[in-house]
Length: 295
Picture 1 (cartoon, helix red, strand yellow):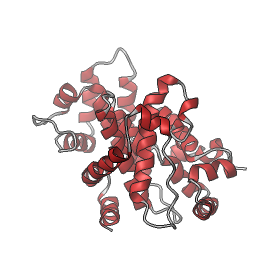
Picture 2 (picture 1 turned 45 degrees about the vertical axis):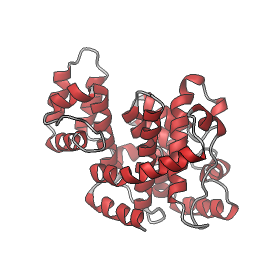
Picture 3 (picture 1 turned 60 degrees about the vertical axis):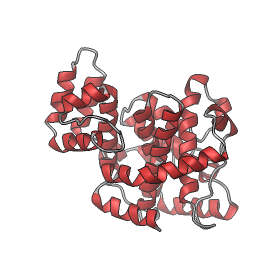
Picture 4 (picture 1 turned 90 degrees about the horizontal axis):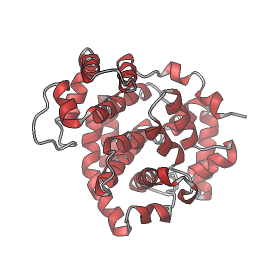
């Protein structure tokens, strides 16, 4: 029987995070490092510098003044937010190296970005400070499905058929057949990447019953749960698609969301998703995802 450890084993070596990000991560976690130390690492990676500045100056962040250096980005956005932008860029760059014949990768990335955008919108509306951290959790929430499709494609396809035929959410079928679900698997890879626990925990818990989650983790997990549910509803096209899970009523209650709010979130997210994909994804993935959006 496949285990989480067996499925994750070796994948982090196949798709390691870039060395420049790993160095940023190391310095952020080092209390003796300075902002100058971190800035120098980013500046020495011209591609990473370019992408962070492009995101910082996009309508996505909505900054009033232009950010033309990494030092200025750190001043305006703060070190944690610059770290999260670097992480989003690094993770997408690594994960786009994985492909599968049984998973539409364009759909995967649109769903991931959609969840990230909704999670950020909800966190801002609810006054939760970690907007970009929840954006990253949303962006990476579905990583487990990418790994399942890559490592055990035939079983993944069989579980998907079973989910469609029984109108049962994929995570429930995965627990039944594997003993764990995509959230458990994706979180294991993120933990192996040594990502911050504040990003990993909501990913690992967003398919669970919120009433059984520790209160200090419940708020941010509820935001990610809403993002993961709305992105699947937004992409649902026919009875042949993955069934959309029900909202956990507690998640809606915690975030003061009703049916009108979810519709507004989807409308607002639709406008932001294409820009976020343009900022984060390689051109080949952008084109495919845009075609899906327009369909």
